[in-house]
Image (cartoon, rainbow, N blue to C red; front, side):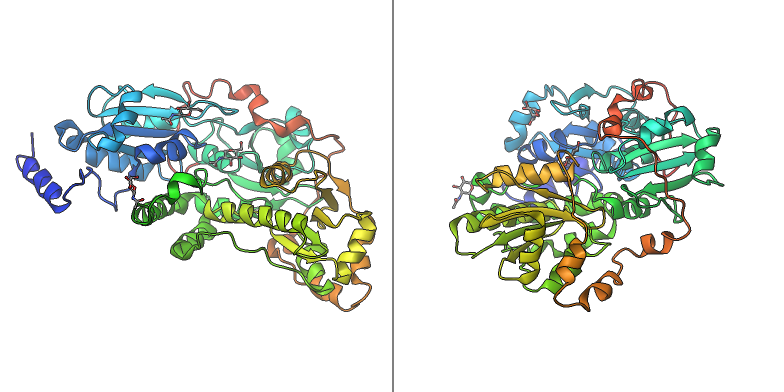
Length: 500
Ligand SMILES: *[C@@H]1O[C@H](CO)[C@@H](O)[C@H](O)[C@H]1NC(C)=O
Ligand SMILES: *[C@@H]1O[C@H](CO)[C@@H](O)[C@H](O)[C@H]1NC(C)=O
Ligand SMILES: *[C@@H]1O[C@H](CO)[C@@H](O)[C@H](O)[C@H]1NC(C)=O
């Protein structure tokens, strides 16, 4: 042992925190510290592969592993989760027991199952060096990246609505970085990889250097060539214009036990803030960082959703050519029971997403007394007292919430279907924007010139739109179906760094 003073250190730590069994890792450590309460959410339900160290603070091998393990955590930031569970903490003992931990440290690699279900847990029994651990974890990162070849390009492009991105590269293997991006955008943006020798595809997109990342925002929008650094954060930010990345873990449940007592609540909150900010630097770019800074002021109740009270505002927020998806709740009176229920469901959902630091399209209440609302409803042929509608003016579709109950579960599944681009989209009738414009004629040009999306505006002129004639939504929805991925856990030599 190199550290004769370790016992003394441990004792000092313990006495500094009476009643609490101090863990091995400090708050500032890059290692994600997980307890029994958080394990299911942070590890079990994550789309990321994790390595979890089950340890006891007094164990010498655990202390020896610490520097290497922290190095692993830094190295894999944004690519995989590196976590530790203190099995000496009474609250964690059942978890350590159920995971079959019999000695310390025990390292387990937890890999999410494609398509959901119980994750696959494997013991790591290799060398306890940073590089050996990193290599092992990287090999267990799920691969949702579709390998696209000239002959499969049409198939990849078949679902026109769904946003996609293509990385053009000279490499035959898929980097951990690209895999992690595909995980971030699972079911949001389909990520593909094209090798330079696929000349037809390379020419179709006019690619001249490798690596090059191209975003196909979906619909008829032209493709956008990324010209920033090939670093995860910047790339994720670039792709986010076509859809928000998934949260790093599911949001904290906002009910029952969590509300039990204020003190544990408060400390829990600061903990979750620190863990998510740690991983966010790689996962979600500046958006998440802002959200993290704001975390302490989150109010513990859902807030009412904003209301749109003028036709001009309705156009500006939701009905310009550039408008992304908006969810509109048309109400006759917000005192109406059905309206209350619908608004309550939406505000709870908005809150849930905000808590999970996920961005969702905006929700608005639109009182029917607003003339813009009346016109829009007439055009869509909707006559209910309360109507829930999602509109995407940019892509020219809308969806109607058909159920009658407006409860949170049914509204949420409707919202999920929109997020996943599942189910039926109706075509917006011609002139929806114009109809809403009728009254205040000046509003529309002004609003649409606001171009929320500068990149897109800048590119729309010179870029070649890719419009395959393929049909249907069925084909490329599931990258899992791609046979090239079957063997991804095997031999590929890969780097865990920002290399594409
Ligand atoms: C992990 O999730 C599975 C279900 O997917 C569940 O059966 C299991 O108990 C969970 N494990 C832990 C430790 O929470
Ligand atoms: C995991 O991926 C699914 C899409 O398959 C997504 O809906 C979900 O939000 C992701 N979960 C987390 C915790 O990111
Ligand atoms: C706080 O939580 C602990 C453990 O969950 C519980 O035993 C205790 O009764 C709670 N205190 C209050 C005031 O609810």
